[in-house]
Every structure is written in C-alpha cells, then in structure tokens.
Length: 248
Ligand code: BTN
Image (cartoon, rainbow, N blue to C red; front, side, top):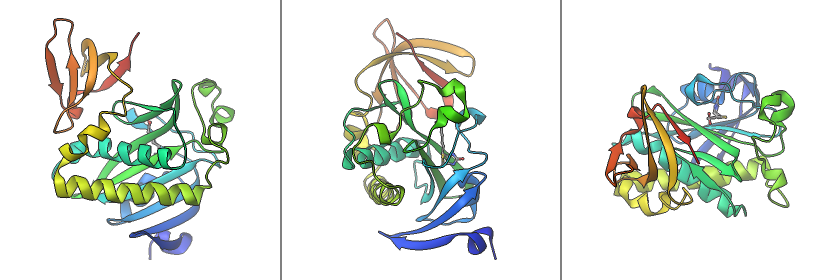
C-alpha cells in the first residue's frame, strides 16, 4: 500500500486517473510513484519545488498539480510542450493577455502567473509539475514576491475552480503530448513559437559563459535560437542553458 492509497481520493477524467490530497511536501515527489496518464493535485505543498533548486510558495487556493506522461523520443522538448498545453488551457478558460518566458514561465504584465518543473524519476516517464496562482496569496507567505506574481482570480471573472482548471489542463496535456509523440515535436512548433510575444533581448548563462543576443524562438528539436549582434543565429539545447535572463 502506498501513501496515495491511504490518503488520496481518486477520480477518472478524459483518460486520466486524478488523485487529490489535502497536503503533500511536493506533488512532483509524490507523483514519482504514479504511472503514465496519472496525476496528483494537492490543496497545499509544504516544500513546493521550483526550477534551479528554488522553493515554490504553494499556499491554499493555488493549483499545485503533477501529471505523469511518457517522455517519448525527444524528452528535452517536453517542457516546451507542457508549456503549450498549459497556455492552451489558460486561453480556453478566458485568459487573453499573457506570454511565455523561455522555457515555460507564464507571465502576465511581467509578473509570474505559472511555473513548470519537469522531473524524471523513472526511465520513460516524466513528471510534469504545474503551479498556477489562482486564489492564493503568495506574497503573504514571501514578501519578496510582492508585485512579482499574478493570479487568475484577478484576471478572469469568474475565475475557474481548481477542479475545472485541473481537467482543462490535463485534457490539453494529453492531446499535446500525444501529438508530439505521433507527429514529432516540430508539429507543435508554430503554436509554441507564438507564445513568446516576439523577439526579446536576453542574456544566456551557458554554464558560466555569458552570451547576449535576441531570443527568436525555438527550433525543430526544441533548441533555443539566439541571434547575435553580428546577425548569426545559434541553436542551444536546453541542457546547455543554465539560465536565461531577459534584458532591456
Ligand atoms: C518554477 O520555478 O517556475 C517552477 C515551479 C513549479 C511549481 C510546481 S507546483 C506543482 C509541482 N510540484 C512542485 O513541487 N513543483 C511543481
């Protein structure tokens, strides 16, 4: 018997088995024991995990969801595909003005609405962790987040409830991942390259080697495309880019 058997309640929706729990340390860690097309949503996380080993404030009222999907042949492009699925879901529920900062931060007016963390604990399976501020108050738990975060309750009337949002995201995620596996990542490319809101001046940290240029989107394998000041375009694979900072 696992922790999910004892604590989680479970429902089936659109090809997913969805577990719900009141509190976990991190839904990504708890989802390590799930299999493809299973997902876990928690009301609260006590040790939510962000990218770059940062924490992620996960107070009640936000969407803290982890979904297990097959990695397929191009796992490095999966974070971009998950970002697309989340953006499709946000658009479906009525959000209009947002953009994505590479690889998959969803921003509204420069403030962070959603963050994604993809983990791999089992060969062939990825845990797609999705955090969206909905009714919660992250700045109440971490004052440094004041004016840094956006939440759906301030952007959409009426805001979606967490179950509805979970279901819309999971159905988009399944269809995007299945399309990627059936027709390759490049079939998603036109939709993904519309998410960035146009070319943007950036600084890349390539493991200590700093490069400046203009981010112009991603290529057919999901590689980041940087146009330098001499007009040369270079492709960088996600694992080469430790950090991307947008600069003015
Ligand atoms: C980021 O740093 O932008 C990524 C944040 C990812 C947060 C989500 S919330 C659900 C899942 N569980 C976690 O511990 N992290 C992800």
